[in-house]
Length: 225
Image (cartoon, rainbow, N blue to C red; front, side, top):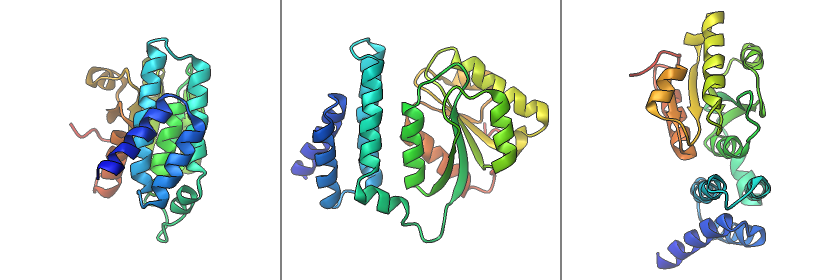
């Protein structure tokens, strides 16, 4: 148990320090030793959260954020991870559409969410970054997802998120889909202002919320206050 804890700590620390080779070796060794891919992703998310905090404190720069994202994607490409992604014989449990809202080009949080959702059996439609409200509406009509996730780490992304939800209200589609917003700056008050069904600061929490929605009897867009 002590050995496993040391390995877990090393994985998180290596991500925080952007040590790509060390992360890949530790991750692969941990998977070979029996670590569950989902648990590894939780460790990865913790390391990525630390990277985000270093960026916010201006100890890291945008290039460091990009590097962290590349490391994360490399871990997702490990054989054990890719096999796990395609190991659900009964198909997907639900469909979710995600995107970083207009005015924000950050994709690390969104990419982490995508990986964890896929591991948990979701089909994910990723619209990318700087996504305008019109595209969210257009792609909703095309794919009809159960859930839509709006991502943004900039403070002004709150207004863009609100615009997306107001667009859904304007088309009469708001009650057809659950909407979750994600970002470290979000609060319950901001979520209420935006009009989302729920918010998540942590990727793992966001995944659990989506799983709960899919497994529950109410998969529509009414808020569950």
